[in-house]
Image (cartoon, rainbow, N blue to C red; front, side, top):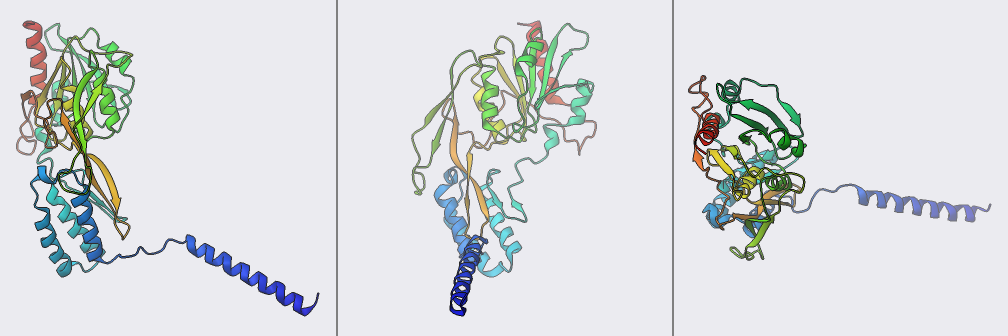
Amino acid sequence: MSKGCHNHIMRQYYTLALLMILGLLGCVPQEPKNSDYMTNFEALWKIIDERYCFLEEKGVDWDKVHRIYAQKVKNEARDDLTFFHLMTEMLRELKDGHVNLISSFDNGRYTEIVDDATTGLNIYARDMVLGRPEYWLSGGMRYVRLKVINTDISFGYISYGSFSSSLGDMKFILSLFKDCDAIILDVRGNGGGRVDNATKLVSYFLTEKTLVGYSSHKLSPRRGHFSELKPLYISPNESITWTEKPLIILQDRGSYSATNDFLYKVATAKNVVRIGQRSGGGAGLPSSSELPNGWRVRYSAVKNYDANKKPVEEGIDPDIYMENDSYYDNPDAVDNILLRAIKYVTDLKKNP
């Protein structure tokens, strides 16, 4: 091979190698552009201003929030952690558990929905009433058949701790309870999960296709520009339903998000009674967007209303209000909410 030919081949080799290296460099994640603090502050504020659906309901002066936190960013944002905490503080002005700022090192969130969870669900007080039974387990459902002492009254008790868990074999569970006088469904402390699980659970308690609520979404970045209310319907479950005897639902401030969704939709069933505290709310369906620095913000994007077109973001009132003494004030507190449910079953059996 001649020297000239050899040099030509080597030049082609080096050119190909260089192109390959440049191609690989294109695949390496680069630092996000516009990653300075003021740019990211403006991006975050604008996302909420244009896409968040509850500014009016929350009564927040978002323009005033801009003025306050723009100054804070200028004066206090020294590093990523400080800036992250400032932006989390700004988002907490919305008092919305569905609003989160998500980075690689933390998840900023609103944590003041529940002041004292033990005034709703106190597992020790609950166990004292139920006698610590041996539960059956199916999906996310813990369930058992129980009798009221010194009576022939029985009820099925179901504890459902998260709508992120499956409903389990509801056909088996409801069939097991068919001879009971009522079902007590405990969703206290259930912080939500999948809305489709909430919708499916409602279907077991309906006699016919039912209007359960409405939804509305933003039509443009302009504040207050929302779609007309869209009706939401649920049909009865095809395999089995529980509609002839009472369904008593226990709720508290920890009943949030998809649980809040379940509570207002199931209220359309004719056999439902809800006992406990006002639920925690969280009726907006969440969405998310990315900031220039790669952090993500999650926010409520779709409004929901009950069947009477009443907003449900701030929570659902029970049919019978009841709460427990705080465990911290009274370690021997009883479960007033559960006892009230059992009394409801007893009174109904005595006086149908």
